Image (cartoon, rainbow over all chains, first blue to last red; front, top):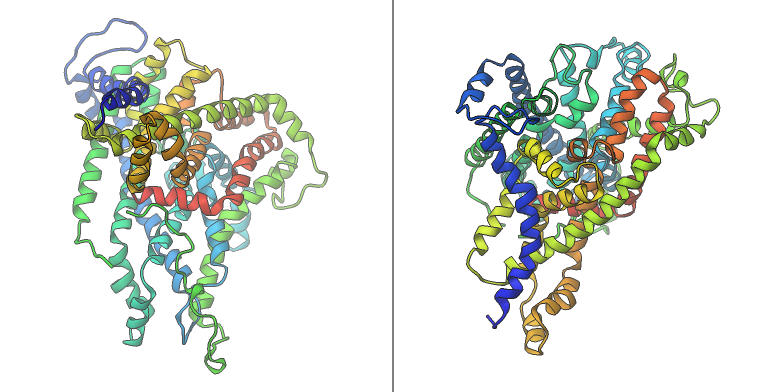
Amino acid sequence: MRHGSYRFVASFLAIPLALYAIFVISPFAQAFYYSLTDWTGVSPKFKFVGLENFKTLTHDAVFRAALGHNVILLIGVPLLVIFLALVFAYLLNVGGRSNSAGVQGVRGNGFYKLAFFLPQVLSIPVIAVIWSVVMTSTDNGLANTVTKKLGLGTSEYLASPKIALYCVMWVMIWGSVGFYLVLFNAAMSGIPKDIFEAAIIDGATRLSTFFRITLPLLWDTIQTAWVYLAIMALDAYALVAVMTAGPGGPDNSTQVMGLQIANNGFQFGRAGYASAMGVVLFFLTLLIAAVMLRATRRDRIEY
Amino acid sequence: MTLQIDVEGTRSEDAPKIQPAGLKDRSFSPVNVFSHTVLIGWSILVVVPFIWSLIASLKSTGEIFGDNPWALPKTLLWDNFTKAWDKGVGDYLGNSIVVVVFGVAGTMLFGSMVAYVLARYEFPGNRFIYYLFAAGMMFPTFLAIVPLFFVVKNFGMISTYQGLILVYIAYSLPFTVFFMHAFFRTLPTSIAEAALVDGASHATTFFRVMLPMAKPGLLSVGIFNVLGQWNQFVLPSFLSPEKPVLSQGIATLLGSQRYENDWGTLFAALTIAMVPVVVVYLVFYRQVQAGLTGATLK
């Protein structure tokens, strides 16, 4: 390396590293520190309380409910999004007519991808407003007028403590399927066509080509998708904060950890306690990423 | 590691179109009908609420929540847009534009500087810094939100442009560094070396030679950052309560509509927020899809 290049390296790194250290690393580190204190967030004085905050957390009924809701989202959202996205991607790729040239993708492939991906570019408050109006609980609500016509009856949606969380889950799924569809579709397009053609000549059905060829070759992508969706499900703050009554209602039925952190940290004057929740969220994220990456590990197939 | 995923790729539509006439199958198979039914069903679920919202921006509250919410507006209430604008949407839009323009510019500049140095220069701590940035992609913003508020407050930058811009840059760096690092690695080294031999400084080589070569990567990650920062909601709602950006303003307006009951205005605000990104999306949709998804696969 030429003389003077260290100075160049340092000059390029200085500002971005400083920004990153001040606004990202230091708050993360402070969160761990404050989680061991009784800091209110208002007064400059606080004292160490050890693991007291974490002990309180285990008895905090609202936090436990919030954690439970995040776990429901954590299981439901990735499962359903990946399932739907895979089905749609598969239909786009091989759902068309089969003829001498092998199995074809459906017509209008481009249109479907254009439409399905749309929610991805809208902000969460925009999506939340649209769906909270679609799911208006009165009989004249958009969704209710449709289900009534179809003979399915009406629903209270977000106003019902029993199903409000699932309404939030639906909006998360609705917003994510298109993105993962395009992701899987890109990965599927990368699989050489002759593999499918060879399988079909050998008498394989479309369904068995999906399970025997497509799925194994897509495994890496699905694994990545799972981790991203899990992180999203652990958050869910923005959607709940905008969509639900309270927010977090009715009757705490849509409480999530993010909401609890915000409430305790900024409204109840319990910044130390909120930080402890953040630390729990951190380890949960770490755990899930590690588990998912291990559990789904397989030999990478090169093609 | 592929840098850009070809969204179109080698789809079956690219398969030979010329076939022996007798073998051409024009009939619709059950699988084909099923595929289209499912796909059209989901398209309706995605597109209809969106289009309905655009139309609702010209309706009165009575028409939005009346007996038939599906009816078209009797008179087009363009006034909704004027009212939305006066209710602060104009200011929110301005705030969003200022913050995103400077936020993305700063992110791209600093992000590619760091990525370039990490990808092309060996020095002690290189791997450490790389992993420091990479780790930032994984962790939930929420862990840091309470201390971050006080950091920004201590700088006196709550509800200021500079506060939001600096925070946006800092939180966009991990992904940008990660993506551009991979990109710079794929570029040939010989051209940069030739420039250095010819007496160009390291910085000149970067700005004059390497950055122009990295344009495709910059475009992908740039689109990613524009959308990400434009749609950012969590950071501004805590760090900029007095100077809301558009996504925050929408959430606030929804809150106040519950009392004021003027939903046409809310949907007009929603339309103002949606139209710019949707236009960008429709114009650049291939780049947007390839940029966003390609980035995830790294």
